[in-house]
Image: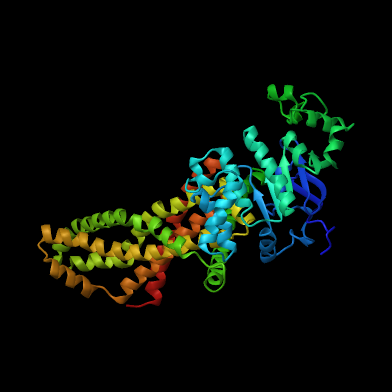
Length: 272
Length: 271
C-alpha cells in the first residue's frame, strides 16, 4: 500500500432528508497521520457528514473510502473490519449506561481481542490514565459529569489503538483545562502513533491548535479546505465571520426561511 | 359526493393496512436476523454471551416469580369459588380439580404468565433499548463493529423464551394449588384426592401444548419489545410511546396466537 494513498476519502457525498439537501457534493481526502478539523455553524451538516462517514447514514450519492475500500457498498463483514480500525468519540460520549466506566473501555477489547482478562484490566487503566480518569473505573456513567463522560468516551475510542479517530465536538462542554488536555492528546496520538484524526468542531481555538488542515462546511458544502494560516488571512467574508465569531456578516444568525411578518400575522405563504 | 370523498376513507384503510404490513415485515426481518445471528453465534466467534443471557434471565424472569405466583394462586382460588356451585348443582364437585387443571395447563397458565411478563419483561426491554437508542449507544455499538442483534437482542430472546416456559410451569402448578387450597379449606375435597384427580385428568397434550404456547408467547413478547425499542425515535416521549405500544401489541398478539394455536391443536392433535 502506497504511503500517499489517503486513509479516508469522500467523493461526491450527498445526503437528502425529506427532499431537503443537507449535504451537496462533499469531497475530502485525508492522508495518514493528518489532523483535519471540520468546522461550521450549527445545522450546517457537520453531524450528518460524520454519520455518513461512519456508516450510520448511507449517502444518497457518492462514496466513502477507507484505505481504498468503499464503505458505502461494503458487506457487513467488510464494514466490521473497517470499523475495527477506527474509533469514534460521540458528542455525548455515548457510554453504555448499564456498564461501569471500566467495562465501557474494556468492551471493545473483550469483543474483538483474545487478550487475557488481566491484560485487559491493565489496558483499561492505561487508557483511562491517558484521559486522567484512572480512579473512576468502578463508577457508573450516571455518576460522572458530562465532561468526564466525554473523556471516558475517548478512552473507549482509543481502546483498540485505532488508525483513525473521529471526534464529534470533543471539546464542547469541557472546561479550558480539559479542552487543552484533549487537544494535546490529539496531537500526541498523531506524533507518537501516527493516528489520523478527523475532528468535527465549532471551537475555533481548538481547531487552530490541532489541525493540519481545516475544512469549513457551509450550507452542506465545503467552502474552503486548507491549512489554518489560510483561514487567518482569508478574503472570504463568510470564513472571516466564522473564525472571528462576529454576529454580523454574510452568514445569517436566523435560519428560518419563512417571512417573519407573514408568520406573525398567521398568513400562509400562499395567502400573500 | 365526489370521487375523492369516497376514496379518502379507503385511502386511510389502505395506509393503515400498509403500516401494519410494514410492522410485521420489520418484526419478520428482526426475527430472521436473530435466527441467523443466533445459529452463527453457536458455532463461530464472536459467541453469544452466556453471562449476559443468564443476567437477563434473572432480570426478566426470576424477578417476575413472586408476582406470577400471587396472580396464579388468586386465579386458582377464583376458579374454585366460581366453579364449585355449578359443579355442585350437577353433583360433580369431585371433578373440580379436573376442570381447573383442564382450564389452567393448556390455557390460563401460559396465557396469564405471558400477560404478566409482557408488563414485566416486555416493557423493560423496550424502555431499555429505546433509551440506549436515544443515548446514541446503539450507534456507538455499531461503530465499534459490535452487532446489536448479537450483543443485545439474542441474549434477551433466549432469556425471555426460556423464562416464559419456566414460568408457565410455575403458573400451572400454583393455579392448581390455589384451587386445592379452597377445596381443602372450604369444599371438603381432600388435598391427596385433589392431587390424584388432577394427575388423572391431565393428558400429555394438555401439558405439552401449554408449554409450547408459553415458549411462543415468550418469543412474541421479546420480538415485539426489541423491535419497538430499536425503532424508538424522538427522545424520552418516543421511549414512552414505544413502551406502551410494545405492551399493547404484545398482549394483542398473544391473544390472537392463543386462539390460533388452540384451534390448530384442536384439529391436528386429537386427544
